[in-house]
Amino acid sequence: MTSTDRPPAGTAGKGAELSGVRPTRQRLAVADALSDADGFHSAQEIHELLGRRGESVGLATVYRTLQRLADAGEIDMMRSEDGEAIYRRCSMTHHHHLVCRSCGRTVEVEGPAVERWTTAIADEHGYAEVSHTLEIFGTCPDCR
Amino acid sequence: MTSTDRPPAGTAGKGAELSGVRPTRQRLAVADALSDADGFHSAQEIHELLGRRGESVGLATVYRTLQRLADAGEIDMMRSEDGEAIYRRCSMTHHHHLVCRSCGRTVEVEGPAVERWTTAIADEHGYAEVSHTLEIFGTCPDCR
DNA sequence: GGCAATTTGACAACGATTCTCACTCGCAGT
DNA sequence: ACTGCGAGTGAGAATCGTTGTCAAATTGCC
Ligand SMILES: [Zn+2]
Ligand SMILES: [Zn+2]
Ligand SMILES: [Zn+2]
Ligand SMILES: [Zn+2]
Image (cartoon, rainbow over all chains, first blue to last red; front, side, top):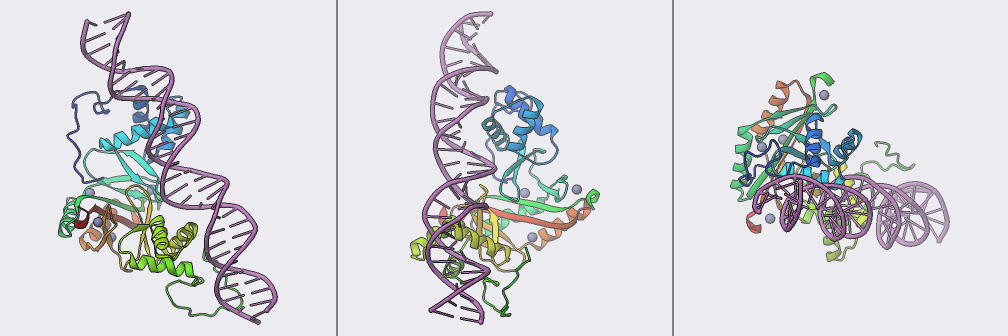
């Protein structure tokens, strides 16, 4: 979600989705849980889900893993209305979300024009290291 | 929440910017501090500022007042990148913000094209009752 | 002045996230 | 397979923003 540049990634072509880090049981479990879960979820929710599944993972580890994945750009992190960090597996390209207010169904959307607009505005006012957040909320067809 | 039952009197047509509540020293102080400060600030920052000014106000009261003002729509509330609630006195028209990550200095920006884009995207996917959030973060010239 | 309702503030309580640190494990290198 | 070591883990303590508690103070109104 941040238009900020990310470092060259690192050891490419390693294992699947865990860019360059050790594919431990815990990390794989978290990654899997996220893939299965549909929509945005908090670290605590993932931790709970893993517990239910029997694949117990320490809460601290869940937090660490989620953050690492987010930093690596492999998952998206956004903040819920009350400020908690929530994550979701998304495509790796920069995009935004059209989220259903009632069921959470999410559509990833892209807007090159918007991206251009934000950087232009920032430049115009002399702001550096620009990033932005943009989310669209609505009620999806099924929830009407 | 609209159960604002008033005692017998009901002197209608109060006025002022503190919609219907008692204009106590503390509330006025918070409102003033917000007007003076330019940019988004957290409850704690406002509390600290007030202390420095000599107009000491309890932290809990600052939180309460800020929330009340935000609910009343008299100030804008948004979340910083690390999830904290930050407030600012803004114009009442729909706009977005270009915020300095370090000092909070803010520029209100408008983007008709973006507004159009969001509704178009929403329509395209059948989402109704659309709303959106859009903030741009950066480091302002002075903070570089 | 006198009173009831509202508001305040010091401090406890909370919930999310981070830090600590001893212990474990994955991954070369042999 | 065996070994060494640095990365990774987890239980619990520590942070930190924010909210709840409740007696004491303040306000609007008679
Ligand atoms: Zn829906
Ligand atoms: Zn974007
Ligand atoms: Zn600045
Ligand atoms: Zn807008």
